[in-house]
Amino acid sequence: MVKVTLVYPFFKPFNDNSIFRFPPLGLGYIAASLRRRGVQVELVDCTFLTREEALVRVKRSKPQIIGFYSMFSMKKTTMELAASLRNDCELLVVGGPLPTLDPTSYLDVFDVVVLGEGEAAMVEIAECHRKGVGLWGVEGIAYKDNGELKFTSPRRHVEDLDSLPFPTRDLFDNDAYKRHYLRRFGYSISPLITSRGCPFSCDFCSRPVFGQSFRARSAVNVVNEVEEIVGLGYDRVWFADDCFTLNRERMLEVCDELVKRKVGVGWECLSRVDTMDREVAGNMRR
Image (cartoon, rainbow, N blue to C red; front, side, top):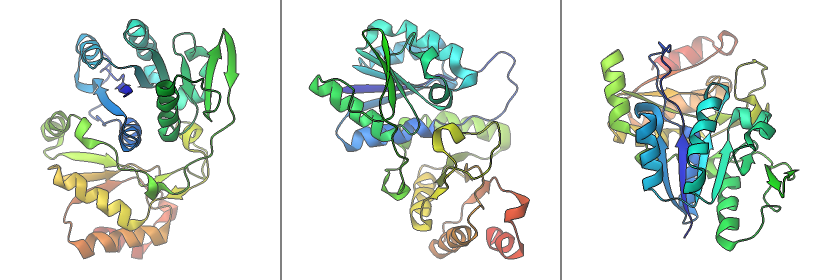
């Protein structure tokens, strides 16, 4: 069996005054997809760890494949941590917004860069490694073959988001996240993502990974995950979509489903004023 360890290389910068801390949902989705295919997987979230603690946990897991998430603010840490683990695995993989935009620079350290959404790609990479075959058939990756940079054909986005398993929240340090938010705000909160893609063009967002086509989960699927989060003992849920209210009809369906099931949990979301009206606001409050 192939063993995969996924790493979220966020360490609190000395000059970082942000009070927000978020579990790595992207890696949680990848871990869930790997589990579904029978791959043994661990997740090392560095948010509440020192670098030494993180390295010990990754090495102790004895993985054949180590997969990193990375973005601009994490690049230096990603490269340093991966270089330290070079001899502790057989394959180093990285994905995320910056690797998708600039894969070449990561291939100085990593063996494979996943371009765009990573669930299916990581499953196929693990399967190729298990079989001992090359990666040329895996869509949406970049890698080096005898020093030559190669790109495989692009991978299409996941259209049916309901088909994805929920993130592996049992692999997050839920107790640490609860303590952090209780200390800061007086309540605990956990995020979930109900859509991918956005038709707008803000400079700072995840569009390189998820694209501009808007894809959304069904209201029933969304509230199923809300109930899972409530079952873990969180007080509130944060809908972490770029714009949760973008699809008006689905927004109203989510509200109806929350009320119908009497979930009774507080929640927050991001929105735009031009997607709000009195009926939407009233139902959100309800």
